[in-house]
Image (cartoon, rainbow, N blue to C red):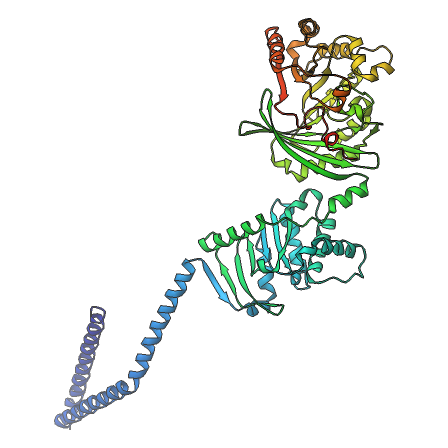
Length: 593
């Protein structure tokens, strides 16, 4: 009722204005008529009254006719407005729930820009679910699709693609066909194999090894993929499949706004799906490594508790590489203090076997020696660094303390280290039994581009005859005291990154007299030196050579004696023997040939 009141007020105002105008007009006519010599005021009045009556009758008739003929149109218009209002309310309700649009998929298939704009709208993520998805590599979308994949993976984002096939049990046959088709274009492929070939080409030819893990392609059972799905930074689109006699059809596309409850449900479902799948292994790295003369043979993982200075738990990953000369163990160690991550360590060998033939090291049983070249060491380093995303792990320690002694391959070792100048998060530990002044100078010089954590001497005794008994290589050399040369160099050095790895062997170097002689030996350099007391790890070599570790109580006593003498000393040992500790080889225990 209140809504109509202004309309009546306007009507009254208009009527008053009309009456005033009419009165003015009539007054003017009477004045004109009265000034005429033969004026007829009565006749004029009759004409005016007749005109007014005629106008009133015409207005009434017009109003009646308008009411008769416009009543149905007004009702229809009112109903139409109510329908529009209800439709808008429903649309607002859908939009508020996260739904942007629902349309037949065929509507969008006719618009090239629609799909291209979706792909271009993403900068750091692209998730796809489909069957063969072969159309993405068709002429209409190929250039946009490939360019966007390369852009995302190169900028640190991820592309996840889920394909489906009814022949999932024959995935190795499928991949074999794909790799063969890459080499020989005449091989006939089915739809999903053609799509996998396109991804293989991308990974092999266009994506650097360090970024390949960011393009993840999954293949699953046909029954698991019941909908088509796209998730980018800006859009979330889903379309259910209908299935009939081998034909699939998307009946409509539902577009959701990102960061809504519905979109989150789909994202969670996608994450759950791929968490139960394994990315397709195209074996590109293995193929390329064989082309380079070295390849990954196997991978082992274990967790162990340790006694050390900064950490007490280690996750150990051993990567076994092979070339025509033999096998090489590389290690990736992750150190934790309880549950707190401390650091990552890459340990690399410098050769196959070792001429040193230390009786306490597993390399004692390896026949022959082959020095790794810089390219092979770099390949193994890159494999561990890139496949484990170590660029994001803070400082990573590179330790050349594993298989082989750098003394026997120093030219290749320093050439390899020179290739690491552009790595910003690498620190370095170098270890040897045979430090000379010249070798130490080379090692210290590396500190100008790779920060040195430790330059380490492996110590078993201050007595030359004992070292000869434990290290066969000493028997082939002229009298040379590498230990004395190391101590002399440290004494004159301005650095304090030196460490002695004191390997404690029962009955060899664990007596009080042995420890006291060691204290006197290093007294002049103790302000520049760290001592690590390492419990001997048992290997096939230690058993053959009748060497045994001491008990932990005695190890602790030696450590207290060194600390009381003013040395920076700590103990180092593993709580269990897992064949992955210092000086051990996992391949020795599994007899990998």
